[in-house]
Image (cartoon, rainbow, N blue to C red; front, top):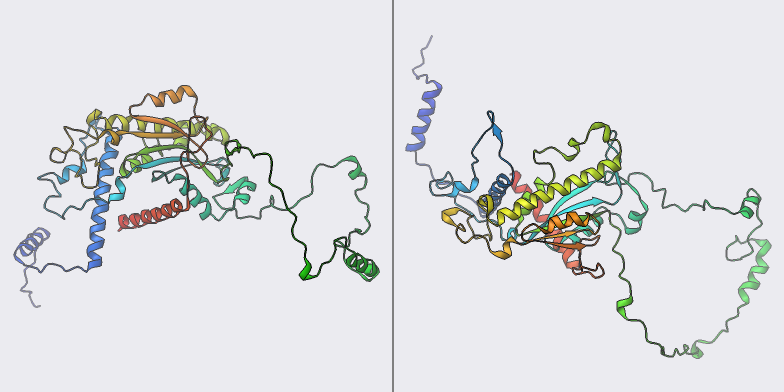
Length: 433
C-alpha cells in the first residue's frame, strides 16, 4: 500500500492556511464593465435609502423586551458609517437617489364595492395602503382604474368584485324587461300580437311590398336639385344673457373602483414608506382582524367598520410620534436625511444643534368629509405642525366650503405616475438582487 506523502490538515489548520495565502497572494483587481459598475452604484444607492428606513422603523417601533423585561440596545445602521464603523473600510459610500427626498404621501384607500376573498372570509369592502409622490394620488387612482381594464359604466354596474376581476358574465349589463307592470299589461300577457304597422321595423314581405313602396315614394320634405339647395335658417342671437359659470354645478368625479379615505403628506419617501408599512398592522405586528373575536367576524360590514376605526387610530398614533420626533423629542430620527446630499442626522454631529428646517417639519393631512366626528378631528388638529384639509373621491384637495377643487389632474400627471411606478418596480428588482 502506497503511503501518501501529503499532509492531512484538520479544519482549523485549513482555515489558517487559507488566511495566510490570502494575505501573501497578490491577486489582480477585478475589472468591471460599465454596465456592471452602474448596477453596483445603483444597488449602493438603494442600500443607503434602505438603511435610513431601518433606522426610522426602529425609532417608531417600541423596544423589544427579552429576559424578563431587559431591553436590548438597538444597533442603528447610520452608526456603521461613523468613523471606526463597519462600513468605513468596505465599499465606498453612494448617496441615495434625489427623487426620494421630495414630499411623498401615504394614502389609505377603500374599495367602493365588496370583495370576495374566498370561503370562510365575509364578503365586505377592503382597505389598501399606498405610497405616492405628492399631488399624484388622483393620477394613480385613474391609472389603477384603467389598468384593470374596466370602463366607467361597467364599474358602476358591477356591484360585486371577486379578487379584483369579474370572471363571470355580467348579468346586470344585459337588457331586461321591467319588473313593474300595470294591470292592463298583465291582462294581455300570453296573447299573440299582430305584426307591427311601422314599415321600418317589420320584416319585409311580398304581402306588404306595394305599401312599402308607396311609403318610400311619399315624402313631406321638398326635393331640391344640388345647385338650388336653400340656405340654412338664420338664428337670431339670444336677447337674454346666459347664467354665470359659477352657477353651473361641478361634474361629479368618475366612479372608480377605489377611492381614498385619508392622505398624509410627509417630507421624504423613506418616512412615507416606513409610515405605510407600520400602519398596515398593530404595534405588535398583529393584523387588525386578529383582535376581533372569531364569533364577531361573520358580519362583513361590522368587521369592516371596526377595522376602519383601528386603522385610523393606528395612523393617528404614528402621526403623533412622527410629528414629535421631527420636533426633536425622544431623540428625533437618527440618520434621517433632509436632502440626498446629507449623510444623516448624527453623522459627525450633523443637524444636532440646528435641527430640521421648519418647512421640513410640516405635515399635511387630507380627509374625506364625514370620515370622523368633529370631536376626533379636533384631536388631529392638536398635533404639532399638522394641517387638516378636505378632499374628494379622486383625492383632490377641496376648499373649506367643499365646492371648489384646489388640485387638478392632467394627462401629464398620469404619465409621470406611470413612470414612477415603473421605477419603483426597478428598485424592488435591485433590492432582490
